[in-house]
Image (cartoon, rainbow, N blue to C red; front, side, top):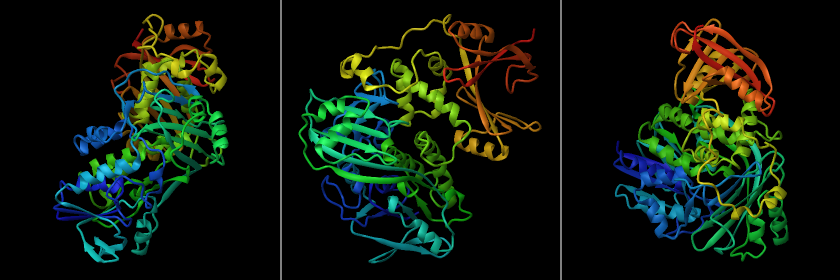
Length: 576
């Protein structure tokens, strides 16, 4: 292939250009905005003035696309820290216990990040990056042959739409007769303001993150950035708007669970004026559901899916798409691959938003027990640094959501003595200033006798449409079922110790733990005050190895967890 044209010269388009430079003789990036020759905010990227940080997976991917990029950021004055040890995280108001980790975070502003990436891309011999070049449409004769611009047509073998949230691709496809692009939107009405302050080493750490949660629709973040600056991000959802005046800002910060931001703002020296931005909804365009699409066309970044900015997923997802682009570029193949790539971060972000009852969107039967478990997980992470590290790995897309349901972690959470209720500022202050707490080097020890061995986790999901649910989870998990029985209509998935059972019935959900000894586990939990709903009893015998060792019988018991949800216990034991 000879020529690829990319619409949009922001980070997503530049990363796509880097990826395609290995397979195309010529790559042209067309950006309608003026492109500066230094690290300054651009009018065409209004979010460039807002708070940014490059999280762990994103930094790793940029280093893969541009070897030495991490060192280049450090040379440009970008501070780096340990995502777990150097950052104060508040989950549902609970202060996460800090501990050393291998996860790195870079406090880089968006203008500097884009400038460094653009320099690297412009240095590629077969890539041209052009500013003030607006694309007005597609060249099309049954497939896409290039683009129309204000300066005339440009032919190409591949066109990449990286036009961001303002993409015109759905309009162009409709005008060409391909119909409407299906859209899913989750409206949260995020309003946030950003302001930079002078960095004072003894006044604020590397980062503070107060995540919003039901009952606290406010968020506050500080991140140390290059140029001896600290960016302060204050945001609200569902009608909560941070003020712009100094007194109002301090009062808003006082309402957050952690004291660090309000303490810092009392004496902080501002370096600029606050900048406000609104983000009405997360939007996902389902090109993969279109009955037909022209060859020679792909889309990346926010043109496909724009995420709630609170979660900071956009750059990492764009880098993942860039790496995938060389494997499936053009038409339906790419859009199906892009949908699979977006599924997990989209599900993670929207599931967090849908915890708020006021947010509208599809809710699954499994969400209620999972949310109850995750509420307790966040509370337990205030005491157990291993749980905090696992949570950060998932939120940074270093591991999938099933990582939080690994047998050992699930049992630690279920047996945790902490309350899953929101943490209060008073409780923080009663224990002393959080930044003075020294985290332990390892989680509290546990002995095999005191904690039963959990081999796997199973979630039973009752669904009305079994074939559709099977297709959905095959796509989401990236693996086919390990067994199915029809009749009666049972489908089993198995992924890294997480087993999912689908069966026909009224939508509901239940989760199970596969343990070594059901009877011993029941007695252990009963002694700890756990309600036992059903004593151990034999359900059936396994005739083959698909769902358990052949010749074993399956023993079940049921308990109630700390939130009152029913939990099943399963044991495979030799037939007695």
